[in-house]
Image (cartoon, rainbow, N blue to C red; front, side, top):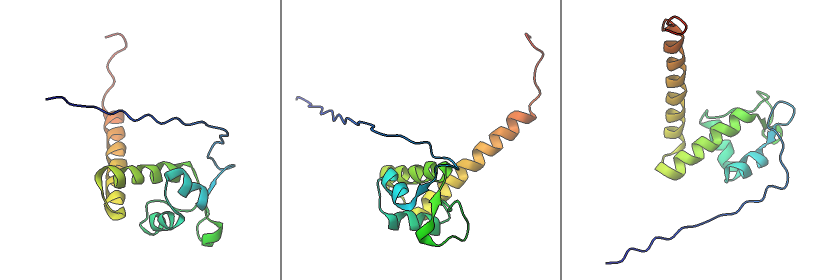
Length: 118
């Protein structure tokens, strides 16, 4: 019996790049495009509490997002794609991952440091 394996290659050409920071936030359309989804999905992320606009209380038409929102949106997208979870489940998973990282940092900081070179 012969098994055939197919490999799919994708080429990407980056023509322009900008940092996502306080001086260069992403608009809703840009965030949706970066995550490979639609603006309605970004609204759903905000409603689920996964991300928040950089300016609280701004009208939806003026929403902009920072790099952390992009990172979180990409993580939610991967969870939806890879594990077929809904946004509420993705929000819970991401929140639990943040808490684990926070607790690990606390444990690491509380552990006594051994003598240098010992």
